[in-house]
Length: 251
Image (tube, rainbow, N blue to C red):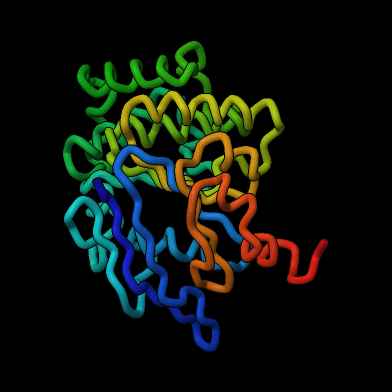
């Protein structure tokens, strides 16, 4: 079953054609990786999914609903959550507080400053946050200030902040960037565990170890255009992919 359908998406910035007639279909419950050289348009495409950018033309349909024209918080309410290249957490707050904020925002449709005074007293929200910290292995650190954690734990926390919102689709923009191999492998294991929940994932990633460990399907973007798509094994052998990364005529 298709959960995300991207059709004929174009985006230009002045003289730069960042996205050129992009078509993409993501199956429910799958991990769909988007790879390509730097500047290929990968993050631009993700920004079109979450309301940070508006395509010049085309359509983005998620679970039967058009995402174009919706504000980012409205897109989030449809069931889409995003993990950024650099972990987006509240570094001055505890891990538990970091989880309670998105849990409350998801339940109530928004998070306003006047909600802060009551969030800590909300037993339902606290229970959700506690259980999610346990699921991602951070329960013992729940009262620590999140800004003091390692990059791997910050990523784990950000994933938990998305998961506590019960998303249908999780967008991950280079989730292992800057990590050690040990932290990368721990993140792969966590994402596999998330897969058991049936959450669909779209991953932008440069680390092919991550891509080939997780992806059911891979789309290759180059100069804003999808040049190839298939299974990870097919993409390993595709000459167009080799040319995009290494240049035509390589041995």
